[in-house]
Length: 466
Ligand SMILES: [Zn+2]
Picture 1 (cartoon, rainbow, N blue to C red):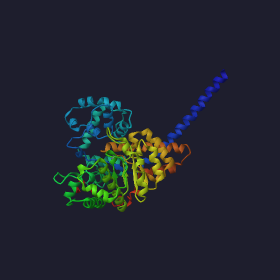
Picture 2: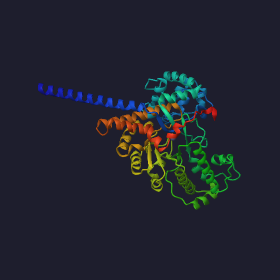
Picture 3: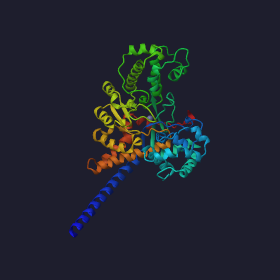
Picture 4: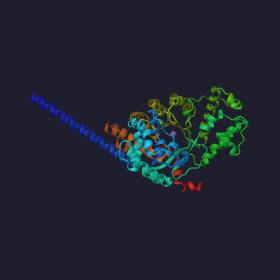
C-alpha cells in the first residue's frame, strides 16, 4: 500500500511538473509572438470611424460611446432597451445605470463586452474586469474630457494603439470622398449603386440617395445608360480620391447570390416604374449592377470587400450572408480580387474552403474575434491549416477609437494564441509565426491593396483643409 501510495504521489508530481513546464513553455511562446505582433504598425483594413458629431449633437460621455459599440447589441439582446443618445443627454448617471445595469451585467461573459473593456484598459488604464456604477462614473469624466477635443484624442489614441492606417467605409455618408488621410484610407461603398438601381424615384417625386446626389453633381438620369455613366463617374471620383477598394455590405438587406442578368433585361426593368417591380425583378436589376461593379473594379484595379456571415445589430436574415452563395462570382471573374469578411461566421469552414480553393479570394477575419473570441481561435487555427498566409487581413469594424483599440487587442491575442499553439506542437517555427502575424496585420494589405506608394506619399492633410 505504501509503495502504491508513493508511486502514485510521484506520478502526480511528475505530471504536474511536466504540465507546469508545458504551460510555462506555452506562455513563453505566446509572449514572444504577442510582443512581436505589438511591434507591427497596423494596417486596419476595415473601420467605420465617425467623428462624434456624425452621431448627432451630443456631449459624449461613457454611455454615448457605449451606444456606438457592439456591446449595445448584447445589452438589447439580454432584454434591456438601450441606445437612445438623446436620453443620455438628459438623464443623470444614477438613472442611466439603473436602465442599463441588468442588460450590461448579463453580457459580462461575451466577447462584445470583453473586447470593449480591453480598449478602455489600453487607453484609460481601466483595470477592472466588469463595469460598475462607480467605475463608469470615473470613465465618464475621462471620456468627457477627451471628447472636448476629439481630434487630439483620436491622434493620441490611434498612435498609442499602434495603428498606421485605417480603411474607412462610410456607409452612413457613402458619397463623401474627403477623409483625413493622415489616419484614414477611402473605401468606396457601392451598396447605393446596386440597391438604388431598383428604387428609382418617379418623375414627380423628390429625389433621394444616389439620384439626389447625381442631380447635385449635374447628371440627368433618364435611362439605364445615364445611370451607368453616373456610376462610372462615382468610380472615377473615388479613384481620384485614392480609394483603396470597394465594399459590399448588401447581406444586411438581401441575399448574396447574384445571377448573371443580360444588359437588355436590366435596361428594360430599369425603364419600368420602380414601384411596379416585383421583388424578383428588383433583384435582377441589383444582380446586374453588382456584376457591373465587379467588372469596373477589375478595370480600376480595386479589390472588392464583401460582408459575409453574421449581421450586426438585433434581428436580420442570417442566411443572407452565407459565403458559398458567392461561388459563381469567383469562377466568373478570375481577375477580380474578392475579400471576404468576418470569417463568414458561423460558416467559418466554408469560408476557409473558398479562400483555399480560389487564388482570387482573400480572407479578412475582421470582427470575428469580437463576435466570439473562442470560435475565432478555433476557426483561425483551421484556416491556417489550409489557406496560405499571404491571403489574410485584419480589421476592427468599429465606430469610435475606444472600441477599435479593444478590437485590435483582441485580434492580436487571438492570433498569438493560435500561432503559439502551433509552434509548441512543432507545426511551425517562431520566425514563420512572426511572418504570418506581420502579414495579417500589415504586409498582406500593403501588397494586395497596393499601399506602398500611398503610405510613402501620405499628405499632411487634416479636416481643417477639407
Ligand atoms: Zn463593417
